Length: 295
Image (tube, rainbow, N blue to C red; front, side, top):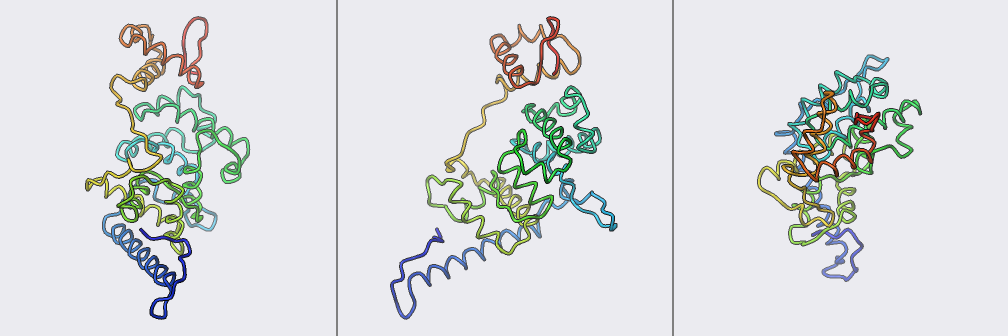
């Protein structure tokens, strides 16, 4: 794999080892960029709804709405693109602006979110919207901690909404770099991948480059490349059927429809109690007059 650290300058044939390695690294990066861009031009997912500018400027031009980018990024966490597309459109129809989302009851937000799973994300997004409205500006709000917004989501919003050169790593990007630069490495951490990612991104359009990287990584996965398990940060997602996630979702769906959840207790047994406790701890449900309801 390429080594971007300074090589020891031993002279061979008028050139140092460092010179040779640096040239090899540059050539390798160029080849990687060419591969990614070539795939993007031919097979890139250019039609994804969050990849089109929708914000109308006074000049008459259109730009990317950071609110819509935030919604898409929160939905795409641990959820496949095909499942997100329809729900993304439905969500924005119900809550077209960050103010509309902030004003909505959490129960309404969860009703629309239903089917995506990981309902905690919906509450994080709802809480983040309130914070953004309180501060008055999304970009300014991102200077402070926001619920559910980690380093990746923060970088993604800056890159996709504002086209700023913030390097990011997510599962598809990680797949692309491990496949191309770390084929023989058993375990690799994101800190090392970031060095390569920053070098590869130099001189590229931040927004389009990261879209291209994600699509190329997704293509590798569809082609049978399974290398994320070699990442030091890899965690295997548990099965949904019979899981605590399944019970939590069932409880929230029932409460969103004002249905009683007593039948779920007998169906799920011990998991029911754990799910209720977790939902209450996460601020998703509260008990009022002996009955549970969405917070």
